[in-house]
Length: 160
Image (cartoon, rainbow, N blue to C red):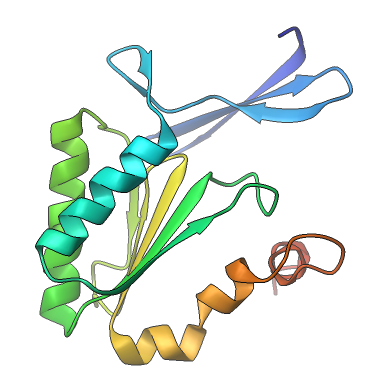
């Protein structure tokens, strides 16, 4: 693939390179472990296995193909309490690190109502049940892609 231009975005310890392909939109660099590309589906199955092993509830895999360029897959799961959400997040991060993934973003560990783990082509949301019901992100990401897709409206909404 021939790239016309590359843009580097660095926020804290995370770095993202977007390459603009001639007339084909943008391509995000794939996840790599030890210099080898990691299949996002394999990573998703690993995280699902970890969550299942540690009694996550109502786990849902969402294929983001055609819906977003943020990631390939999203996993949404619930923990029974703040402690359970915290433990599930710790187990997922440990599993990802053992797999060889060292760069990941993590948000929400202060309260453990909703923990988000950004593993590149995989985004993991772990909620307390009440918080999950309130935000209902499954509805945003499982509606059909296309014109007027709710996820596009959320992403396009100006801050403030």
